[in-house]
Length: 149
Image 1 (tube, one colour):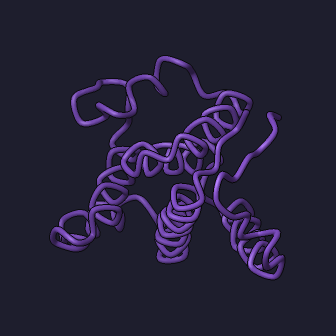
Image 2 (cartoon, one colour):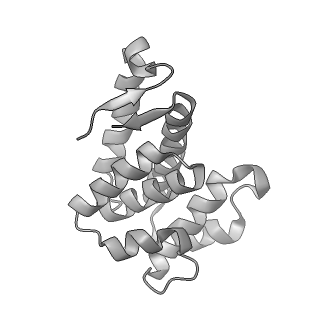
């Protein structure tokens, strides 16, 4: 792993309790029944939308290490037009888009119903937390100008 540089402030060093709490959320997400492939896909796509270079790099490496293909990662920013994603993945990616751009219209009933077609209530909760969690981390990373060097 590359060295991490925070060009403004290392929030986690400043207040380690925040990192401890955030890490517990991440650990819980990975312990859920949502697949690791889907979790990394969520994290990459949210990070692409938010333009968090550190998180894009980090979660792309995680996805590749977990068996995701380069081709699908390359196509992720155009998932709506790409034939490489399943209907299940499309339902999650639609929720990713709507929750990350929540200021537009919130999460639509259609996107929520699509999730209900494929996931249990617990899994939907896990997906919501995963999407919100990476959005939070992106905001810290971007605000502190965190980079991997």
